[in-house]
Image (cartoon, rainbow, N blue to C red; front, side):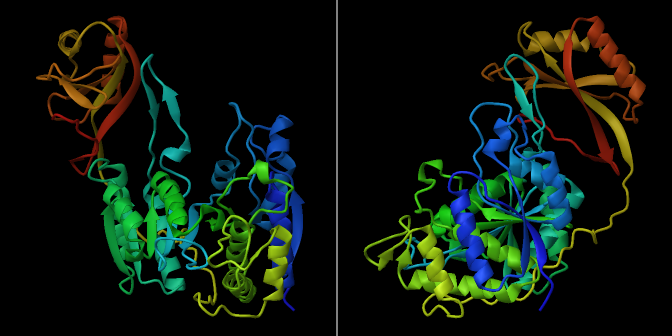
Length: 482
């Protein structure tokens, strides 16, 4: 008998303890070789004054086992509480969020009986870095961060996932017709990685029309890889149109650690009633079993669960008089699955897990030469209420010099000077673009001198962004209206 694998378990809040107990009962009955270390996370920890929702001592268990099976938690209302999931993902580098979205028709109602899509979402970057600022009375800012290695990690994982599970196609969703630098980089890396997997089809969709297509024709997709924000939204959309968010499991995968969970919440109103459906957490545990090298146990559990659905033994949330034969509680549903261990589904497609996808993040196979980087300008952001664009332009023009020339002023990204339109709505947040007047690379001292002149003139500069070229190509956005 293989040695047991230690895992860290958190029972969570609300319905969490009930569905976790049911999940562990099923996977143990199926032969899961695990040793459990229990930690406490969630509401009680938050209310003890720990803003992350996890005690410092619990980190040691997670660092030791490197595998976390987590039930849903409740985050108390009010400010000051950090997202536990985001904290764990970033602390342990869990860069890949994996959500299989499968239809179980006719036993779970859906408009798309053939749906079988896997959403693979980048988990660490994008707007979810949470770097935000209030800059003026009227304006706040959130930074969207997309990196070359972060993009390669998640995209390569998506192709490895497709190869491991005999998937035929990987689709990339981006919005690089607008965000040409950030989403443009993600798209570029997708094309480079895709070229290394000629056995797998690839395609790219603009995220808005791609989302419409996913909602209307999900059978057109197989594996979908997305940056963080799009992935968060569309993984819930995909799970819901497949049948129910409440039945979807999720994996968060990193080089060293992994976390597995249901994607639904803690449903405190249903707590303690023995009515909750444990399927989402159970399917998360199935993903965990594959990850820790017990695919045969995962296969037994998943097929028994499918057979239970087929036999019409359903919890209240999916119960339907058309197809259900017995409405059961959480414990009874788990027992029904246990009774069917070793049985195969007859209508639904059986599963057969082999091994987990290969982790490819450490390889970083795409090695590109460093480009020549030159400083060619600066965007200076101002808080200003002294009039319109022409008045600001006249005042700022007088501060040119030392090789820097004012070329443009924007407000909310729209060009308003020179030759702006009077209809353009403006706030108190202005961007003044200065470029090298002689076409030569700038020295940082020239920008410092410009800021000194602005300060002496009484302007409140709230942010600066240096403008660079890489191998002579501009690496900054233009403005609408240019």
